[in-house]
Image 1 (cartoon, rainbow, N blue to C red):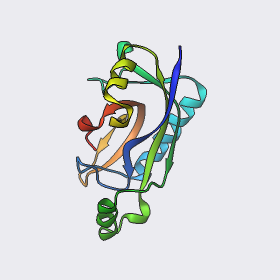
Image 2: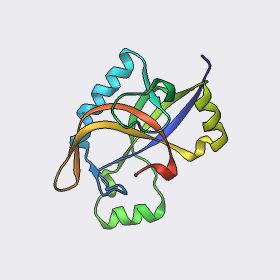
Image 3: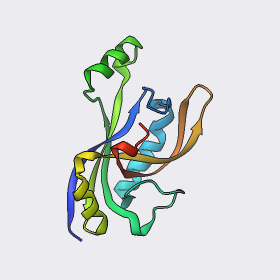
Length: 153
């Protein structure tokens, strides 16, 4: 299968509240992230177009193969930067990036029509939401391709 490669950012920004008010802390994320990175190194990991209703990747919705994930400091919009500085969180922010390879199928046609710039990757995870809105991630299943308007971050 022919693949198109993209370096795309995830909606997961560590140590900063997202639109849902959830905070993915580095401590609650890194073990699962490291395990997921190893899974990629040891075999093929696929993501799909949109999140499924359960944790299983739906074969007819597979849109990409994940070739690499990494965490790095990211330049953020000025408005968000100002808010983070005010909250004392600016130095701690890190964002997940994924290298994905789009798979040539019916989903690729839809993605091309909408435009790749309108998508982010969102993590599909198993974890616990704590009372203080921090999230403890136990397992990362995949990173799915989500339309920005539908993403909850």
